[in-house]
Length: 86
Image (cartoon, rainbow, N blue to C red):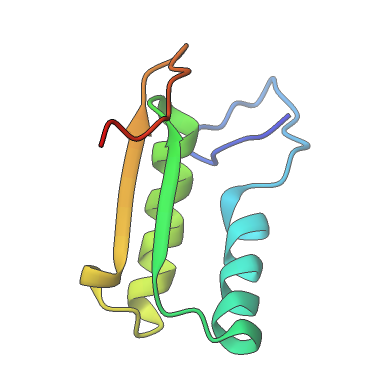
């Protein structure tokens, strides 16, 4: 199970990878190997995507990606229509 890394308990074993173990290596690869310069962070509107994107955004900013090149968008649970209305 995915774990956002924002909590801890002496009575729980957390075995899932945290965002810094999944997203940071992927972003590093995208920047260095693919030349990515812009990032669009998407997610359903709840704690895991928001926390994961917070970690990823901090990494991107620290590594020279301008804030203007980082977009975020969150959709509510159950959202199904991603069709452009234009």
